[in-house]
Amino acid sequence: MREIELSAGTIEYRDTGGTGPTVVLLHGLLMDASLWDESIAVLSAEHRCVAPTLPFGAHRRAMRAEADLSLPGIARLVAEFLDRLDLDDVTLVGNDTGGALVQLLMCDTEAARVGRVVLASCDAFDNFPPGLTGKTLLLTGKLSPRLFGLFMQQMRLRPVRRLRIAFGWLTKRGDAATARWLAPILTRAEIRRDTVRMLRAAAADTDILLATAEMLPGFDRPGLVVWASEDRVMPPDHGRRLAELLPWGRLVEIGDSYTLIPLDQPAELAQVIREFILTPETAR
Image (cartoon, rainbow, N blue to C red; front, side, top):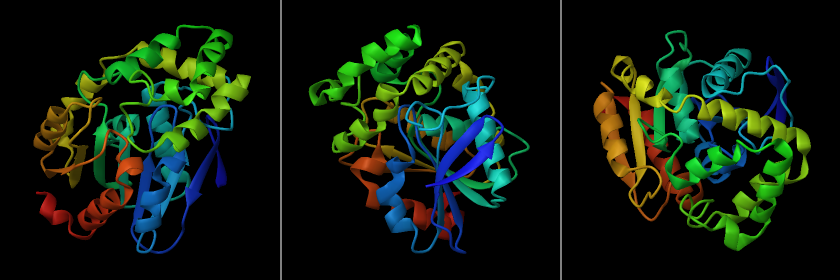
């Protein structure tokens, strides 16, 4: 993992390097960049893959006390990250709440470094926080950081992680990854403080993606929507609605997967992204 100092603090990221088209991959709440490891293994033969670990609760470097950890604040952090690495004509990919960040950047007239986007089973419209999992998580953000940490200790147990209010409806096969993602929040007080701040900021603006959706038809670059056909957290109808809103939009469904397609079907997702980058005109 590499590191870069940004206005909010130090961000860790994975960068495969290379001269191929650049793909930047964004994860969701209580996840880190390793969400994309298996998809990157397929894509990196022909693409430069960059995956930052954002301050969504599984990060290992605490943010500054004054950092804006709201959803728009973290979207601006992603834009700053692209600028600092001087990444152009980027294919920006977002899964889970990472897709919400992509939507915010699609509506940012200054996000000129984004050449095309992929929204993969993500928060959209009125589904924020998403499903029972997201709603439960935002409720825990009302606790003090200390009580939040005590509450989260039960997530050490696999049967608890597999509950539908936890990761049970997010991934079919990724329990080992979810256990790893929880380590910072279970062991470090400063990460718990960041996470509670982030959750409270999210709870203060739950209509943000409804307003964002109204601006998506103005996105004039290629867009691909990839949805898990068995998704129980992100409504399948939202995938169709997103694809219809985008002037260059197209929908692809992937089977035998829940929301976290990069864990459940990483190779198939990578192939869909690869084909989209090679032939973006088919997205019309």
